[in-house]
Image 1: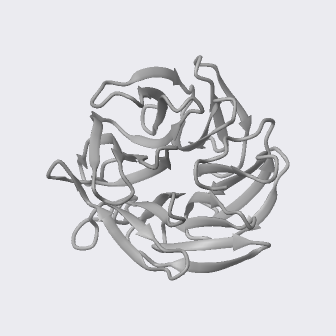
Image 2: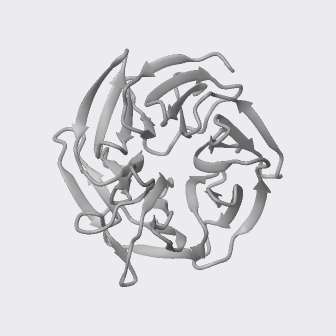
Image 3: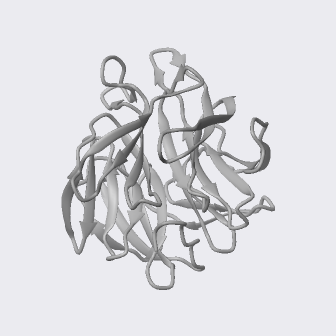
Length: 289
């Protein structure tokens, strides 16, 4: 196992790490329905949106935008259903903790279980909808693009198995998506509306793929389930596993630090946020500097 240091522990299924200018890291606690800031071994609650907050990113206005699946029934390991379990995109004011719902539908169809998001330099964001799973029901998954002010949302692709992590490559022209259940990485043209994906690579082994981050060189770093750790995929389809970890739910990675080589990783089964040094710098996100 690679060298690492503990940033925070006793978190309730942490995901969506967001590295802030002051060196702190904001995570969502999926199991507690809240947003938490972590630094120097401490943590504090920023907001309590409820439901199942997941992927998160800072927008051009400095607010935190969050994918909320509506909640998870951890006893049965399936999505929550019923009142309050609606899938939605939320805007959170980090100064006041105010939570505002900006999307819960697209083209008249309700969102199911929004999972991960990333802002593009143009101020719009890309997000995935994993689709709810409960009983014997598995809802379809999709990729969406939306404006931050709540005025415009578009479905790029729907009917997928389990779209999870999403990222915009450094060229700004390519969007990549990790499919949890197929362990595949797909690419989309960011300049085209509705389209079918292009297969980039399949990660071998009994693994699932979760959320992701992009390096400055365009490599795709993905939280890897079952085996644990981070898998790395190049756009040419080369697959490696540069970071292994003894947690079956390594769900997410985010880059920060002065040289963008500090990698913050959520280990959700054990409730930890850890930090390690990456071999190459991560991509500096559009509105995090």
